[in-house]
Amino acid sequence: MMSQKMQPAMEYQKSTPKSRRLYERALKVMPGGTTRTSVYFLPYPPYVTKGRGCHIWDVEGRRRLDFVNNYTALILGHAHPKVLRAAREALSRGSAFASPTESEIRLAQIIKERVPSVELLRFVNSGTEAAMFALRLARAFTGRAKIAKFEGGFHGTYDPVQVSVRTPVERLGPREAPLSVPEAAGIPQEVADQVVVLPFNDQENVERILRRHQGEIAALIVEPIPAMAGMIPPRDGFLSFLREITAREGIVFILDEIITLRVHPGGAQALYGVKPDLTLMGKIIGGGFPVAAFGGKAEIMALLDPTSGAPAIPHPGTYNGNPLGMAAGIATLKLLTQQAYEHLNGLGDLLRKRLNQLFGRLGVPAQAIGVGSLFFLHFTDKDITDYRVSRSADLGKVRETFLGLMSEGIFFSERGMGCLSTPMTESEIDRFVKAVEKVLRK
Ligand SMILES: Cc1ncc(COP(=O)(O)O)c(C=O)c1O
Image (tube, rainbow, N blue to C red; front, side, top):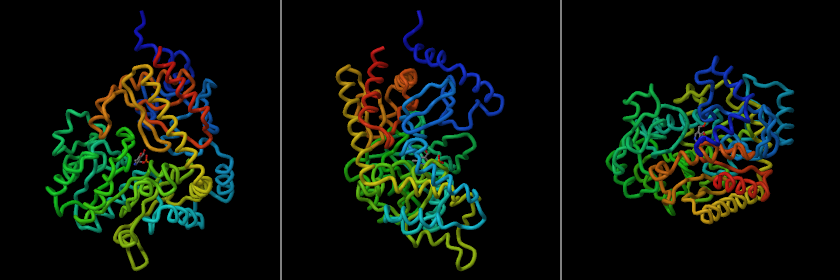
């Protein structure tokens, strides 16, 4: 008899023969058949032909409700007519120039108005680059080399931040003195040794560890709601504590809002009332195109200023501020009104409530946590306060649920992370909860 565990994967494979054939072609041209590990899963991902609103279609012609939205980037869903119109208009005038366009000023102004801690900013093409430049700025500004980050914190693929991200718990070392574990082969231990790793939501240990490295740390980088680590809300006062201790120790405080700019027009910093020195932004600010940014205090950003000769930190980049991404970003942020955020956040609260009621009713040790339109399914009943707890949940069960949802017309992520888009209504929330119920009852 086929084991229960095999069923979702078998069902998925049976319903996706065209994707399998494409994947076999992909294997011949890309390592493991993929160009982005975050969209790869076993046995192979579904290949997509189009997206519209809150739905995507795969090559089999199957429509699924999209709860991933390109890992939170597409807050308006797919192919919003106003975003497409803005991008088409920009494209009709040419795609990129070795000169600035007015559009970069307009997008920067909108961001600055919404996120007042950003006095000046620069555009880049990915969150990875934003993290890289923010850390370089912090090192140059302070004259110090070390950086501090949290266990499970993800900030892209620049060497010093790819440390202790998805590390198995048994390799993390003691909680009072976490190890700096390189996340990828090719990151020298010498680089990881420059990284001080901290436990999230643990004020006492953070204070103790930072004291141990007094005068050595240039920057402390943190996601206000660590996303990949499990969409973990910060404890009351934790971010303010980080703000205060970094100010006291002369450490540049960097908030990575690449995902959390979704929770409030002013980002999580507005929601929790903290003012970082530098902020990383990405995803939603490009309206579906590769745009990211870093910005903050004018006196730090001045290190990039070329007006008095060669800047301390040069910042070239063929596609920085590219007009297509700028136009899509402007159109997107204009549509993101206060009401749009309220709509999304209300749906997020409803989704978490209904899922948690469902888990209670079925007696399944699981929980949906998160903030605003961001959520995460954890198959554990432990209180999720940091990466170590989140990592101890039943990861196999999340994967099974994800594959099961695929057959129920729901596109979700293998790791359990999801988000909403503005075209969604209570009826999409209802569909998701009912599909989860069906999968769990199987
Ligand atoms: C919090 C956070 N920071 C940084 C990044 C890196 O961004 P990118 O994939 O654009 O390099 C991501 C990407 O998912 C992210 O979620």
